Image (cartoon, rainbow, N blue to C red):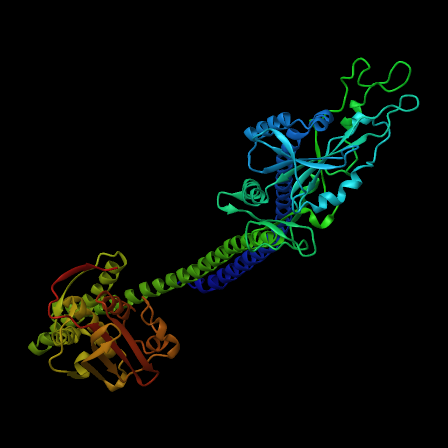
Length: 619
């Protein structure tokens, strides 16, 4: 190895450390920025969701208001029709409304309550079949309407509103439920022609079916405005505004009708643009009757009176009793908008930090891979140096012996025989090293093939011992072999298993130390997947340090003790043995004590009696 190579390694390590530190700082900065950015995104999402909820609640309110106003428009007739109690005209309007209404069963009855000047007040109900009004008693539940009748007699007015300009204000009585509209007629002018206060004629009372409201109107509006393809996006409830609210509709039992945790609360009685009960819209002022040339107010009999009030623009106001009002309460299906935004932010952070974690893991894998690659490169360099040395030794011995024989230096028969034995031994040693290298290359290229068939472990052990004779010093080693009788066969490739045991035996011989003793035992045992055969190769040699046990099966690795003892080898034997064992479905374990020896155990699964040949490729 060049002399300057060791100096490059610390420099490379320093550069790697700087690069890793820089990337780690970048990841931390990205994490902080991501956290802050997710907070800004969450706030923007909160505003977007709130705007969306406001649009949905406004649309719900407008559609409900439109449904009620359609009824009011249909039955808002001239005071003269009210005074005449024209059942025919009211019935026609009733039928016309039913043909165009989304919920024709919403209206149950139509009542007229008239003051009855001179004969006393009277309540009449429209008989749709006979198309006439018939006197009836006040129905049960109309007590609130009766109680508020005296208050209708003296309405408030804005300055400049004439008698016929009284606006069409309807009152929604939620507790009944019903729609109530006071009817006023014109009075004679007083003074210089200024109109006198209008005359209270009575009220139109339209009774609504609460079952239709609860089971049709509210559910349909809720689905239309607060649901999506996967169901309700928001939980919706409609309840009264009392301290103990009465619930009229609930899209989910999970929603609370309490107002404090609600994301949105809307008063349905006020309509989309609530005003005071008698605060008229601006467009009403353009419908005041004109003045006469003498400065007085125009009267119905005075010429063009086309600019009379527009009666097709009804306005609905709430009943005066606050606890009876219908209120729309909306919460997000996750509990609240804040909970939804928090969930959204957690998902964003999970995805973002997951990506950053993936980058960190990738960075760590790159660093580890770089370190392993550098270590592998170093091992490969050591392997090349070791192989060169190991190959040079037998080649040098063979060449030297051949030169001596060719030069006639050795003439005696016994010496020639010794030289021949030496050349054969070194040739076998050289052949063994070449075979190891070729096997390793084949394994790396995934070209190794194994023909698995039932084989006897005793035969494999004997073949491996015979092959081990090429190892230097094998003839001087005492080998104790003990194989239990009648062992079942194992599924394996005979040649590959022989090579596997040969490597284990050769390892025990090379590192057996001065004891020059190894032991080979074969026995049956039971493993985690069934019956197994165990072959134990033990020695009393230099042993392996505990910290090196996890590395001894790595290619090209040689322990410190082996290197110090100058034992020959290229660091491939144990690696190839482990790969062969695993390819046969087995495993190799090791126990060792430094200075006292090592024990390798090869476990192979026992073959069944019906097992046949099987060809497989190395993984």
